[in-house]
Image 1 (tube, each protein chain N blue to C red):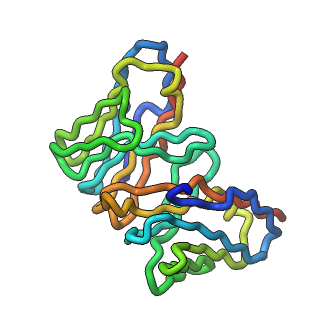
Image 2 (cartoon, rainbow over the protein chains, first blue to last red):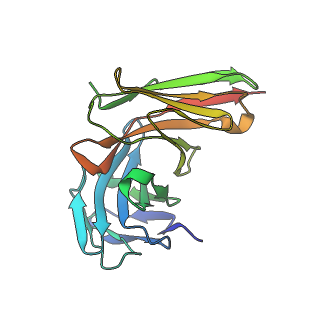
Amino acid sequence: NAGVTQTPKFQVLKTGQSMTLQCAQDMNHEYMSWYRQDPGMGLRLIHYSVGAGITDQGEVPNGYNVSRSTTEDFPLRLLSAAPSQTSVYFCASSRTGQYGYTFGSGTRLTVV
Amino acid sequence: RKEVEQDPGPFNVPEGATVAFNCTYSNSASQSFFWYRQDCRKEPKLLMSVYSSGNEDGRFTAQLNRASQYISLLIRDSKLSDSATYLCVVNDAGNNRKLIWGLGTSLAVNP
C-alpha cells in the first residue's frame, strides 16, 4: 500500500502564481485533511473533507480551495500565492476522525 | 489558555532512561486523544491512541486523566531512535471531525 501520496515534494512559486498540491490515498479512507506547519505554530487545519463531494473549512482556509470528487483524491489549490503561504503542507487521511490520521510526506512550498 | 498545551522541552535524556511527557487540554468534552511522533523534516506518525483505561504498547504507556484534563506519555528504556518531537492531539469537542494539535515536546536521547 502506498498510503497517502503527496506531490510535488518541493515547489518554488512566484507571488501571484497559482498551483495545485496533489494528494491521493489508497486506503479507502473517508476523512481527508490538509494542514500547514510553520515553526512555532504547530499544525493548522486548512480544509477537510468527510467524504466525496463534502468539504469544509479549517482554521486557516483563506487563499486555498479544495475539492473532493473521488474518495481517493483531495487536491489543494493555491489561488494566488503569497509569501505568507511559504510553509510545509501535509495531507492526511483517516477511516474516521476517531482512528487517527495517516500523513503524506509533505510538500515544502516557498513563495518568493 | 491554549486548547492543547505541551512542555516544548527539549528533554535531553541518556539511553535507557525513562521519560514522561504531559499534555493538558482545555475542553472537557473532548473524546479522542492521540500521541504522534514527528522526526525532523518528516511527517507526523501516529504513535498511539489514548484510552480512558490507559494503554501500553511495548515501551510506551499512555494515560488519560479526564478529571484533570491531561494526557501523559511514558517512554521506558529510551533508545536513540526515540529522539523526535512528540505531539499531543485532541479532537475538537465542538466538531469531532477536527483535531487540535499541541506544538510538541522535543526529545533527544543521548548515547
